[in-house]
Image (tube, rainbow, N blue to C red):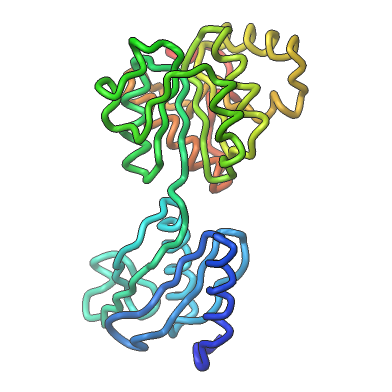
Length: 273
C-alpha cells in the first residue's frame, strides 16, 4: 500500500489515538524512503502503509508490536529487505526507523510479599511492566523491600480488585505467590473476574490440588480453573527466585505469542528434580 497520500493512514491513526487503542507509528528517518510510514496495532489487523519493501514491512511490524507490548518507543536499524543481523547488514544500505508507541505499560500485579516477589518484580520491570505488589501484612509490604515496584499496596485482594480490577486487560498479568488460603483464594477469584491475559499461581502440585478443591468449593467453574497457570512458570528446572522469575515471565511471553512451550501446569511429577 502506498503512503502517498498519507491521509487514510493518519485518519486511522487519529481514530486509534482517540479510542486509546494501542498503536505504533513507524517512520523511516534515514536511508531509502525517508518519511515512509507504517501503522501497526496489536489487534491482528494488517499494518497500514509501507516502508518500501514487503519483507521490511513484515520484520518491522513484528518488532513494532514487541515495542508496543512494552509501551516503548525508539530507533531501530535494518537492511533494505528487513535484515537485522550485523553480517547481513555488511555492504547493505542501512535503514533507520523510529517506532513511536502509544500504549499504557502492561501491568503486573504480584500478590504476596515473599522471597520470590522482588526477583519477579525486577524481571518484569526489564520487560516494561508497571508492577504492583500487594500483601495484607504491613510489615512485609513495604517500599523499602520492593523499591523496584511502581506501587506497594497493603491490602487484601478483594478491595484492590474492586477498585482497579476493571483496568486489567489481555496485556496484563496477575501472579499469586502466596500459599495462604485466606489470601490466595480471594486473589484468584478477583483475578478471574478481570480480563487479565495471564493468571499464574505458585505452589507445589500438592498445594495446587488442594487449592483447586478450595476454589471449586467457593464456586469457581471449570472455565475459570482452566485459566490458571499453576504451578506457575515454564518447566525449566528453576530453583532460585531469579530463575523462577525468568520462568514465569517466559511463560507470560509464550502464552501471549501462542508458542507451545512446556509449562509446569501441563507437566507431571515433582517441580524440582
